[in-house]
Length: 589
Image (cartoon, rainbow, N blue to C red; front, top):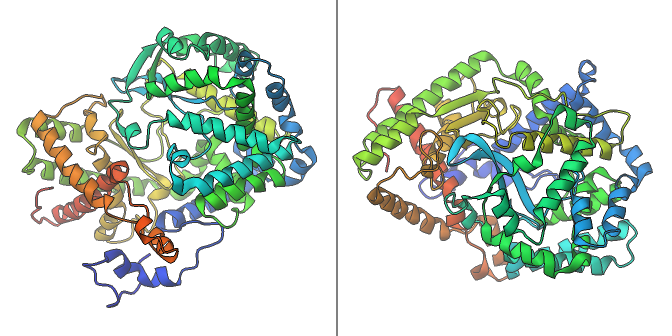
């Protein structure tokens, strides 16, 4: 985004605007965007590349291509109306008891949510093994603060209006009352949610339980019955032959992230009554299904989730949304083709060299640290030496042979099959060894990540493109581009969360008490610094309304991980460049 700089802004005051002010002053944000920057520019290119792959007649038999075509078929959606979800609606409305609702929630591909989240990934205390993780859920807004803070009152009312409209579209006469029931129940659920800072604490969110302990925690929910219904429903699906799962064994051990949330939910499951929970179930079904139904459903959903929540004036072109859908279901199927077209082997080699440079810069900085003791320093260097870089694409591609999609089925049936496949593949991992070859992102994703339980840094092919990286430009430009991203991800290994894991991915305190105390003092300074900041656009918006003093500040405790990553990424990338040129590097402070 670099443009011509002048004396309007001094680099020591606002370096970002010093470099980018001309672009910021003249660029017109497209109506289907609520933000735009380097990541977004590359994401658009990636979408176009995947679009070309899906439109290529040579790829018409891909399961990804089938999903793409079904989503693009708007005319058939208008003809089908609400028929694709009518059976689910009838099951929910016909429920006479909470046990009946459990049965309705049981099918894995039903597009019905549970009031808690279930995911399967590594056990932080034994990162070689996968475990079922139970996390708070049950709300339709981004987090609990939306139901609690006065500044979100207008958003809550817009959410209520959207729910009311969705209920009206399925022919409910009492649509406003149903929406009120949902918002009221979700407000009560949100009361028991941990806030966005608390959920970042990987130690407090590690609460292993046996199946019996988990069942007692949710005694009113009746976990044994729910497991029985899930098993019965799943065994009626052809996929159960290809991906056999024993759900009782899968939850033999679970890791509960927010135990007090389950206590609160357990009470609400009994106290709120079947009618309130039926309204909640229908709301979850409708919000999850709206994009796959008629244009009126789709628009109603977008008017809230897009316009109100994201500030996005217009919906993305349908083909872009179709690409996003494919990426979320069968991304590696098209990702394999994307890599063959857009990521040469030479790029992988050059990025590996850059990673080595960044790791060496971290090694020098940690070795020269003035505030770390020798014992902690040794463990930090050990962890650094065990970092595993994953560059471009996975060594082993995901197998989609059990994914049952077809041109002969309607979009909703294909979505149920897709979600059934994803859920089954997730549960299949429970209690089994972690596959270290598996990626959390597609190669065509413009992003990167650090996974603490694997101690690995992952850089998909789509972010290893110009302007972040180019094999044909000076090393300094690559250090300033992808080098900062690499440094950022390595930095996550030593931020407030990553620093709780050792070099083998175990959740373990490898710090001395004194060094951890020093670390907390340094991070608190950074938290305090960010707490004083107000996002510029919010500051301007509140000032126009005469409420400048009420403008919300950054929550430094919530953003601390990214702040550490950003600052260490820039710092270490500069030091890596200096090392590359044989210059002396200052210590990392």
